[in-house]
Image 1: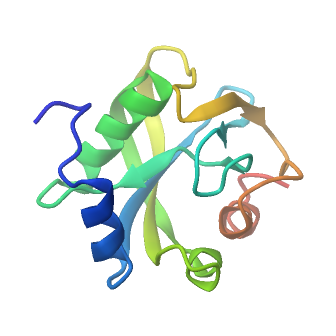
Image 2 (image 1 turned 90 degrees about the vertical axis):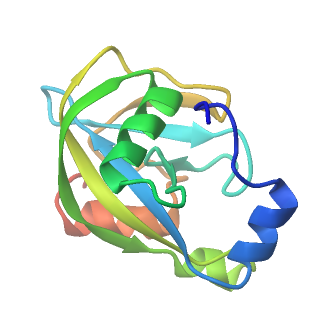
Amino acid sequence: MSASEHPLSQKEFDDIFSKVPRLTVEIIVKNKENSIYLTKRAIEPCKNQWHLPGGTVRFGEPMTEAVKRIAARELGIHVMDMKNKGYIEYPSHYENGLDSPVGIVFEVTSFSGSSRVNEEAKDGGWFKSIPSTMHADQDTFLLANGYLK
């Protein structure tokens, strides 16, 4: 399966993840100034919110491979090394009738390329503090772990 193909139709995806938790990976990329790269969603869910790049782990896919796939697709970077930094639960999704994801957070410690956004984001940038329209569940993690203030 190529990186652009989806293993499920949107209906299958919605049917499955309306009944079970969804495993995702969230990607923290820092620069030399200790800013982190966030993207502003151009699509639902969470349209117009700043967030960590990330996405669903495919069936049978190792999480580290999911990080590499998603970082390449969403940011245009090639991840060479990463560290697991914990997890984020998403009660805002469940409470708003979306789904129930759990995100495993990885900090990219080595990569090549320059961060840029794809069609899923309308903007991207480096941040040292929480932007006003930050995804509510991710801001809690970033603040608690000292990534942003």
